[in-house]
Length: 135
Image 1 (cartoon, helix red, strand yellow):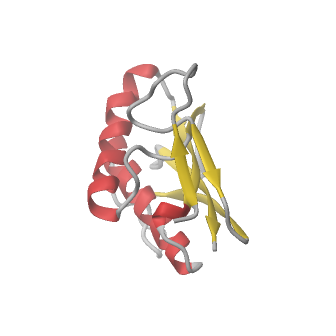
Image 2 (cartoon, one colour):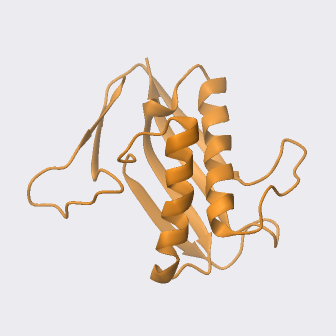
């Protein structure tokens, strides 16, 4: 594994994600935003939980397609339409599904959630960018 997650003293002790990721490797993978769509562009889910899970499955496909593993993911950025703190439980339910079914680490690597007005189609609620370090 090229990514080591850390919870340094003095930072908020999150349980869902680690605030620090130490990464060592020879290749930096920058994955464009992935959404809850099939390879043909069809939406896979209508709710935020399902879309987060499906988008993370697409992240996993992209990382694996480049020769990596989801454990190599060092950072995730979530762009969420109309984000409010009240949506956190839905988002985390989707990440939990991905941890169970797709092998994402628990806790997750460092994450950032950014609220946006809209994504590239009206059906999409979330898009997820990933950075991974491959050996």
